[in-house]
Amino acid sequence: MNQDEPLLAARRAFRNGSRSFATASLLFDRTTRRDVTLLYAWCRHCDDTIDGQILGYGQTGAVADKLAILAEIEVQTRAAFALAPIADPAFAALQQVARHRQLPMALALDHLAGFRMDVTGRLYRTIEDTLEYCHHIAGVVGLMMAHVMGQREPAVLARAADLGVAFQLTNIARDVVEDAANGRVYLPDLWLREAGLARADITNPAAREALANVVNRLLDLAETFYQSAGVGIAALPPRAAWAIATASAIYRDIGHQLRAQGPRAWDRRCHTTPMRKLVLAARSLGQLRRLQAPPGAILSSDPAPQPEFTRAGRHS
Image (tube, rainbow, N blue to C red; front, side, top):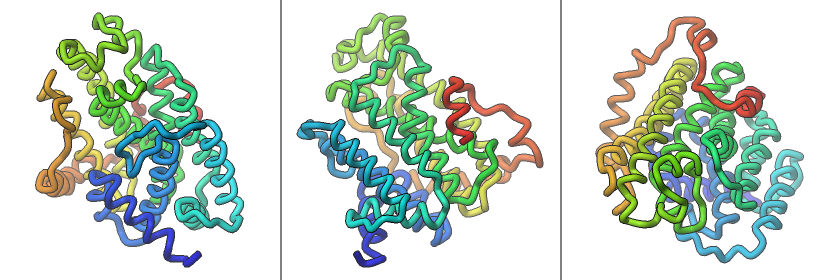
């Protein structure tokens, strides 16, 4: 395989599959942007392959044996870290970034554990269950991203995991009706019951007001993770800090839209326009000075509250 082929394929996947983060990634320096793009390609490939999607869209349900597919993804992931010859561009991309940034294989396998929760039909009865899923599917990606940006300090890694969890909570809020239609409910059963809802009610337009109240509760929780992650941004190199602050602002803006639209939030998919992204990027640059923490602040302030399993996992 041509050495440049994984990067070219990764750029196509990034440009078309993650428009929000792709915009923010333009603010990275060239080398960091390259490695972020390579890492994204592997994450996107795993998600799409398991769900039978193309760049995150059009779930077909056509994947017959998802456990077998997940097992094969794990085999190829391990091979990538073992520096074995790789034919698939997505795993070649992972191999390149893992070798360049000394990514721990344990983090990649921890991410795949989140897909296993989907494949096995994990039920989310409490918010702790939901946060466990968010940690594996997105908090661990935050940890890998932090490694790509040269961060190894456990307290900074904790903040990176917080940002991943914040992103995933926002994704759950935005996609809650679509996910439920595809048989996936990440809102905790306890919260639904407290709102007088069952899982089946999520797709019922008549239940949208009650659903909006539950989602607002989820967005309140996401906000604590965004605030915690903001402290960690201060530890990043300047261009990386700007890129991550912009990504945070873009995802946060989606949550603000959901909250503002209330029961009508799922009439169409919430998104941030290109012009709005530029505004948020400029605003993030202006706010970075406020985010700069004094020496020791990241170590002395507490991250967002998470269950004990994430505190152990995200510091590894």
